[in-house]
Image (cartoon, rainbow over all chains, first blue to last red; front, top):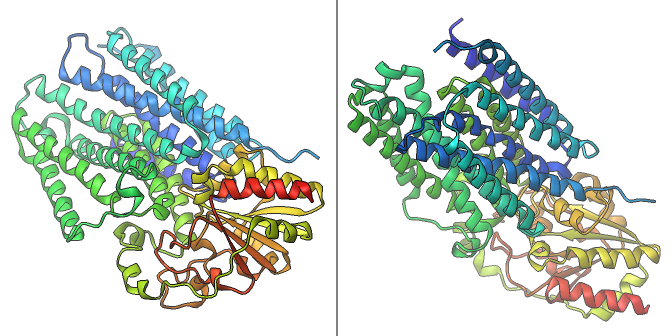
Length: 94
Length: 479
């Protein structure tokens, strides 16, 4: 099978997995879940890493390094604020 | 260069493990008890993905990469630790924008290093293939819209841009349509027509410019109360942008993670829209509160509004067996979440049953009130969803509305001419006594009159939510 077709299969199936996994979330978790998903979207860091690789300074290296920095902020910040929020949720102790 | 076994087999397996961990993480993240563990799994998956990529890259110059990671980690760490809980919506929006910016830059770098820096002749399709021509354009387009859209959302949430009110440009729909056509034209030029590095990069800059502008234009007409919808939609976009970047660099892990974020964001967006009885298109086209408010603005004078002091309210609270708080955005603005909790503690000691009614779109992001109250240690099982609590209002002694307005407006259920007609509301008006804590009789976000304020069982307590609550605590202590 053509690699592009494989990628399209993966895209469509992953979209359905996303729908199935997230369906029926209690409203309490809407914000942390959105924030956690937001951190996951920082996966674009993998793309950023692969474009900032050559050693001589060039526009693509500078932009690539900027892409790495942006994605890292998204990942590190995203997971940390999500954890901060989730730490606060607790049941009443009786 | 021959790929080693490590690069051909081991790294893809590490990616697969990361994809599975992302799925498990999201799944656990959908339940309160396991959510924190789920987040840790997702973070671990991200670490695996990064290590896998670095191994795959092999023997390269790491200075640029390490520089980027160091700067990003520092900024992300500091802002995540320092941000106050009340500023969470804008922080999430801003992080989201950075993810979009990264996808945008990945798209640009990819054609730049393969075509411009090597000075290749021919169209992008001839050099990199039609798939890459399309996905690079998409990665730039979605990434740029996510970036500027999120930054505008961030500014609006901070009330820095026109005090968070919608900005309605004349002929904005025609303008957006024109820009949309322009970006399609530029993409076709970029991918299939331009055949030398200069004209290809010209095409890319035009796509970038228009998309950045589109992100701004799509979010400025949207008002504060619609922000939960926009923030979760932009979150969905950033996932799609990551997916597009995955097609560009042929990486299935990006496609998987991006697609899951994309669909998760769409579901949340849909939940928000249903909660407001509006279609997504209606929110995006915007203008809510702009045109309609001027139409109904004439009857916004209030009659027969009763107000009372804190002492009187405390006396009624003394005899109340059940109390429901209805929190809204005003609670976050006044930072009154701890005061609410303290008042609730005192009343619970006296035997009052205290609960909180949470409207799905209260606040400025999905679940905003839950996070805010959780910060003040309010147990989450006291926060009750709209559908569950609505039948209970008629058996409730006292309701205290704190900084909420449109979500308790009975006009949404009765008045067909109301701009918010059909939006499900919290039926606070059915309680025996309703206290509304508010600074003044100003209209809510939708700019319409709230008939709840005129009800016989309603009493206004004018003042800042935090001040009012603190004096109430003082009164209740003396009872």
